[in-house]
Amino acid sequence: MCLTLSTPKIVLLGGLPGWDTSNRQPELDHQWLIRLTQFKDYLAAHGQLPRYKNYETEHEHTLCVWLHVQHQKRAENTLLPWRLQALDAAFPDWHSRT
Image (tube, rainbow, N blue to C red; front, side, top):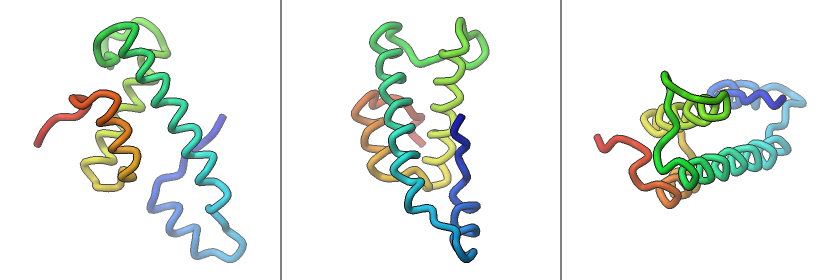
């Protein structure tokens, strides 16, 4: 299981001697791309966004939680630009227009 640290925690830990996040970022990016692929596969198979409350499988629920995190990061302006572009390319209506 891969635990993801929040951006503020990574920034704070980055100031400690011996803490190096540079080796972790490629792994985090790879895991994110896997989840994006799962999200696109779900959309292709079901024709709708994953549901949060009335989900049918744990996989659907996991994707919905992942998407919710992407919403939060977008709202906080912490979603990496390439990730935002990838989500927009996969499903342009994935987020609310505010």
